[in-house]
Length: 183
Image (cartoon, rainbow, N blue to C red; front, side, top):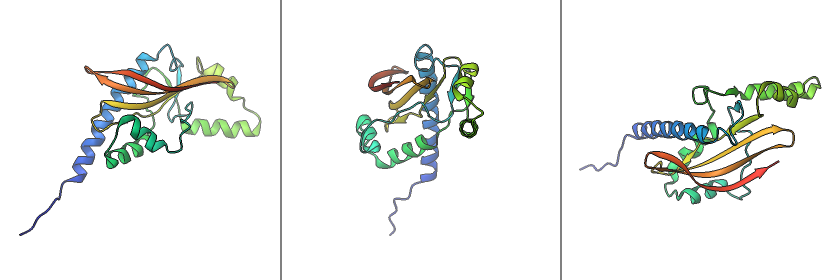
């Protein structure tokens, strides 16, 4: 007699990743609409989060798991991996100019050599500076999410928040603002 707990983990992971992509798209589109006059009013957005300040906590993972009441460590591990490797794409932010990581690296090199002024470039090319948005980290039921948003409008100009969103009656709503920063 043979007993087995074998499941098709590849299929489960694929379904989870697809669900995550669907919910991520839904929430990002909702945030872009809700924040079109706020933190995300800029005409430019960074593909990787740059205008973001992480909360001052000793263990970010435990902090987020606690906020979202995540008990499943595998679920959180997958969410964390997706969060870290996430990049916005033009199809997610069609009304914004996408500033790539490569562009920022080029800006830094040019600035170091002295012939480039990033803030002047930003004023000329991006209305209201640039903004950033992290990939949402979802709870196990994909109805609660942690997100960070922010904007940089100059050398000493910017702001952002970390938020919890909840899906209620088919729509994502801001449940709580956890903290904000201003420069």
